[in-house]
Image (cartoon, rainbow, N blue to C red):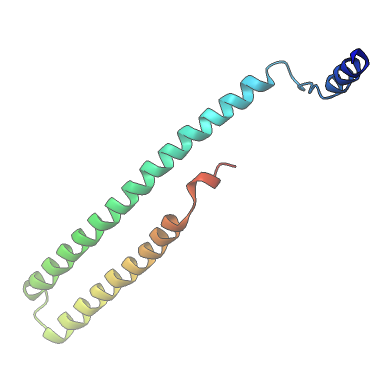
Length: 116
């Protein structure tokens, strides 16, 4: 029995892990805590990106509407007015599509795996 205990102690002594640096464990814990803080900040920024996108859509719609209403005073030619109005609306739609694509990619992104 005592022989088995000695063998067990000897085997367990081989399983000891020596750390490369004296403060290795502290450094690892600090990095883990920093990553957790970054993940929380990324989640907050993700929420604000959705809010800003919606605000941009609403403001862009209002600006587009007001410009089309006030375009009569600036440009008397109705043909030029329609072309300019269509160009502005096309630009607005392209911007929405581009930003929606970026927002879709951000929404699908797994923020837990970013910092690994």
